[in-house]
Length: 164
Image (tube, rainbow, N blue to C red; front, top):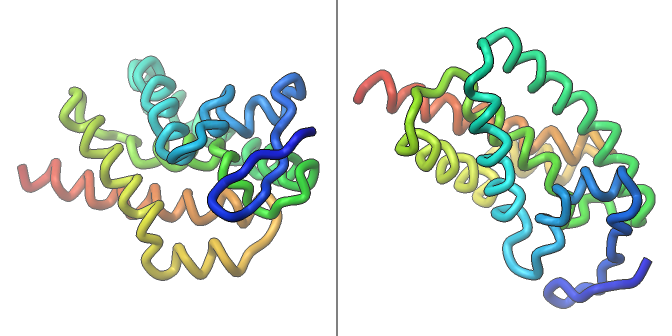
């Protein structure tokens, strides 16, 4: 493992030859020197598009595996790297965006709105998202703030779809 600079901190680099790091870092999307969370969410859009063609039950099953597997995956990568929530770990953004898009109306407009809403809540971190981000450790803590951000974004997206 080498290291990289992110802001003022020196952070360890993932080993993308390690399948856990490869997945946790979104196939390298999280290695972006600028806005790794946004890059991870853009990757999530590409994952969402084919998943959106599945039945709702299958979509929810896949989402459940992404979330539950992500708790272990993010926790393992964080332990390997010795950083609680390395900014390059973006599996949580993938899960959060996929949650945002549950039962979303079809079309690029809604994908873009879902993307913007999820990024807004993930960056802004209103209560209880910020509290979860700071207060819960391990893989669960890494995943949980993005899951709640995804729930907030999904509620807004569904509200917009209902009123529009």
